[in-house]
Image (cartoon, rainbow, N blue to C red; front, side, top):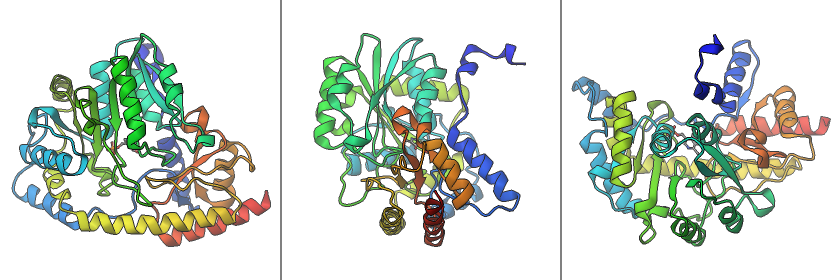
Length: 387
Ligand SMILES: Cc1ncc(COP(=O)(O)O)c(C=O)c1O
């Protein structure tokens, strides 16, 4: 059958995170008790105000196709949010609502990338970036964010990777999997590179609200004169515990957004009408967001202390709900992920799933309940002693 596959289809690989999660689900179904710390998904239930808005939308018959760019009420709410929280000024023509940030990134890259075009992406980084780029015929060129530099971008090294085939710099901050972010000063330097080489920037800000220790999130599109070359991608998934609703949005230059809307029109039509109606209310769920952030803060402290007691060092992540500890003294990333699964009954992702720079690390999240995290640390302590 594979002989019928397109070249494109051959280039796409399974998501290793989703693949691991599927295996773990099978193990759990067969009766094995596993603590799931692999897939990046809040354990919280979506705030009630959002669920009620969805129920209301269904009762009111908002169950039809919507405009391909998204419903006007949601786009207006997004414009207000972008202005007040991200300092990004936009208008209705510069917004597209998408079925998740992932789809937004796909539409943006599908709009921009020709065969052989180079996109600079972080290493380590979320696996979908390189997969989508390569599926579209582009080349993902990895800029290193090494552990010895606390996973920060080496901006000079980034500049040195630009060639005449480079079209886009892709940023993801706070970063999945490291939790590291990019400061305003660093963003200014990256902006200068984009301007000097006439590049576009796709800025994936999915984790913009999950921040710790006073970390401030600055959207690169808010820097002076930068908006015309920035495509900023946001998500409802993590901030509002809405992973299954599939809702995200993108703001960027009108010609690019218009092309993305055409792609959405011809492939998905629109995001789910009910999710969109509920999304309008999400921006009013600030009290719920604050409660989740308080809980994440508590869990992060607990996990960092617990890992330290296991003799495992870990950068305190400025953002996201991920930890990317250095497990190199226990074995390779793959070995330790397997060891944790087998002996600690804790499911994590090997760091190499996020690029070569991920070797020596594993990704685990703390979007699980405190009792689960306590059990995970107890089990990891025992597993490490066995080694
Ligand atoms: C960096 C990053 N971007 C985008 C996404 C996808 O977000 P969404 O659920 O809105 O598609 C994820 C999900 O794990 C992510 O880690």
